[in-house]
Length: 252
Image (cartoon, rainbow, N blue to C red; front, top):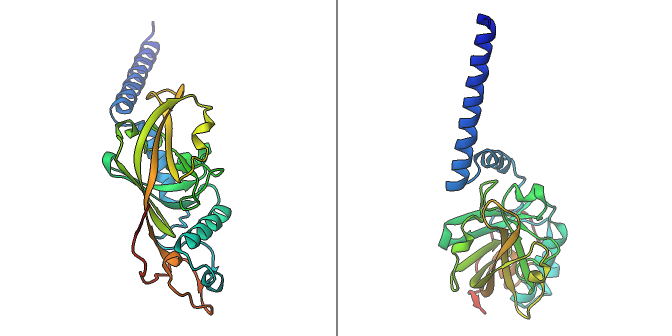
């Protein structure tokens, strides 16, 4: 073996050792925390999100003349939720999901396709938004793309889950959890009251099943135009407009 070929084998061996070490580090990080490569990708992509949610109503202009005809706070919330559902594109930020028990606080993304879920927990567009009275379904990753739902298995009955939308804050409490098949779409069916379902792959590092956490709506605090007592028919609401608080929280 010549000196040149010997040097080549040494370089190849070193490259294989480094690759093996990197793979081992990735596996260890994924097991103890989350998959680091997709975490970096998700962090970069989230920084460039075209956010529509700003803590108040973030829809395109809504006529206050229309809202003035809707006297019930519940009806205003339902109207604004339905409008948001019609206008929010996949991949847009439509709210904020907070789960205190596991220290989770993530932007809520419209859409549960692969691209949307890389940005954060995604709302299944074929299910209602909070305030529409049905079953609100949200999916999220457990090991990749910042793993927002990694620890949802730790949620217990009574734990709160809060959704901050541009038209209201919705507090749910966990009722139970279940492990179901990937095609168990019955989890999104209406149940006679508004509920939230959080779903993710189960077990960790596998997509063989789905872990689903069910939570029931217990309180609503209106926000933005949903809390208007008597809208001025001459004005309209644009993005980021701050409106005065008027209604107390309503408990279900």
